[in-house]
Length: 283
Ligand code: AMP
Ligand code: MN
Ligand code: MN
Ligand code: MN
Image (cartoon, rainbow, N blue to C red; front, side):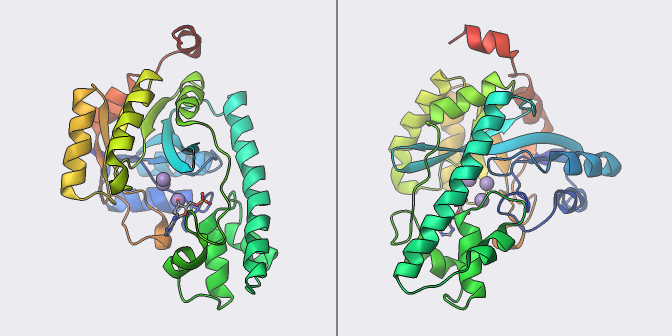
């Protein structure tokens, strides 16, 4: 049995509901899935209930935004305590910051003669913390760009004319936050920035020192050579290898279950959970 350990819903920048993802996982023949929306746990209850009905394993997760300088780093956290005060505070802080950042991005766009209504962006985001994909979608809706990639290429991409960085945790602190919330941390899609492979390998060593448990070597955005490289990096450091689609519904052309993690690896990951008191003591 295999699980898809990285999926998104409308609670962040996916287009499907948590229940729909569970149904898709069942149809794909998976044994279960993780819900890893960006910086929120809001979809867990719905997906857990549907997984129970479908006889699927539900792995509660989050994809936490971190950054090192201007480089954004995504850290997956599994089995975190949904009542952990520090984790919830960081999610709330990121949500507020994303809201203010969206306003600044819209001001920059307006300065270039591109009028996008704030309400249109909020409607696109729905219950989710506002991300650039929601702004890009509102730009398409307003007829300002033909499609999402163009919105990013011309305006919203990192370093672009309407880009506003968000202030996120250092990657080590994201790993620590996840561990102190009783979860295990996995570096998401390490190979999606191929020109930074050396830097990212050094980042892995920093995160291993902070207690990271795994690497998402198998990702729909990694080619065969990239997967082989990150599998080797994981093996050499005794890290668990995970595989995932990073499903975003209709927002990306990747099917749920396109990459998966064997149940044995999910168990190995789960075995690396430690009580928060021990985590605090080993720092
Ligand atoms: P945000 O969290 O608001 O910074 O937005 C990050 C999301 O935007 C990522 O998870 C991607 O889905 C999307 N994204 C970032 N850069 C690009 C790009 N150059 N082209 C298309 N989508 C992008
Ligand atoms: Mn996303
Ligand atoms: Mn990501
Ligand atoms: Mn993701």
